[in-house]
Length: 138
Image (cartoon, rainbow, N blue to C red; front, side, top):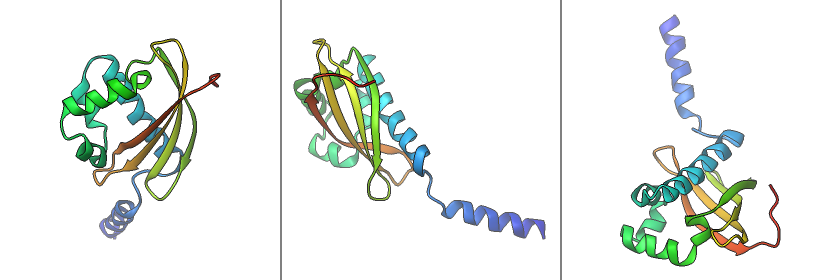
């Protein structure tokens, strides 16, 4: 009897989503933090690995990806500091995460990251919208 109960429990657990609610948001934040950490340490290949397949199709090589990042997203690439703001779950498996940054130029920025849950259970970054901010909320 016990093996049957264990088998049923394992089957039910396997059918549940890997992330939900706060755990999903925490996993998305960990992805963002890991990518920024990789940029800061100069491990650009690792930073590229956090980009979702849609981004990697647009920027199919590390050089092209880094050209885009360093040319357009310098505050994300080398922030003096950053903190997380609001996070919102969208469609199942998607997150929009607000990030406040102080760029290398000392100016304040707000980034909105979008992330999507991948088939392997990890979140990857599908896009970043960046704008200057008058003040930072931390």
